[in-house]
Image 1 (cartoon, helix red, strand yellow):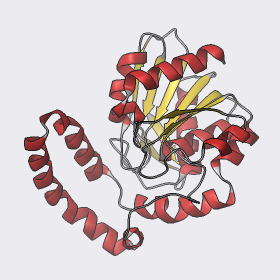
Image 2 (tube, helix red, strand yellow; image 1 turned 30 degrees about the horizontal axis):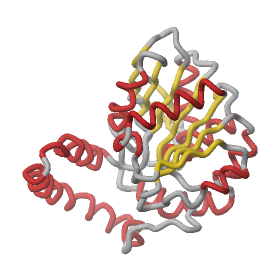
Image 3 (tube, helix red, strand yellow; image 1 turned 180 degrees about the vertical axis):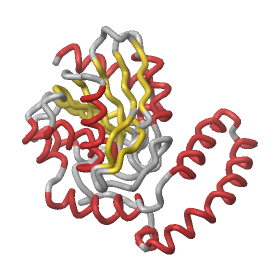
Image 4 (cartoon, helix red, strand yellow; image 1 turned 90 degrees about the horizontal axis):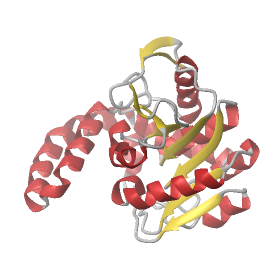
Length: 268
């Protein structure tokens, strides 16, 4: 699907996949940093009978490619996709960095009527991020690490598959998505995103958007935990904590995640 890179006004081909019932309510799914629309496969299997599901590979990711971009620019690209699909009443779900994009989209676009945030804190105030991350914000170092990590990743993938065959498919997908990633996304996420969220945290944006919002947090999320539950509640969101889930409830607990989404949309 043709869209526009909001940083350059250059046409890009956004990778969009549509599943489910074409006459059902539209649920848009936006993946996180270094991911792709494939990470929602398990959730789609459980929701396709009840929704028309639209998934988009973000700029700098997956089969969309293009230049790296922070959430505001990503949201403008997704809004163009919604316009081309003639979607006027969308429920938008975003996981991790995709939640930033979903919130931006909900705040700016009347096409979005309901919002679902998965595994994302309002900002980095109490986030636990990997040590040494600062080196990935230096373009030359980042590009080198990205290039070297790919053959190393293939070796680790084969070793992991021998230990846990059930995880081989997910590990292979993670490696493919990492290869497709624009390395400049590291600086976007670690610097630009940090500064943007410090100025306007996601809970403040949720309050301003004023749209029914569900927040799903993982109690064992190694990046954020469930520490932001109260902040989102005070912003007017309905908050659900999955105590045993890590950073990706849609993969780890797809049945429970689908049930929470279905219940929220029924009540909203």
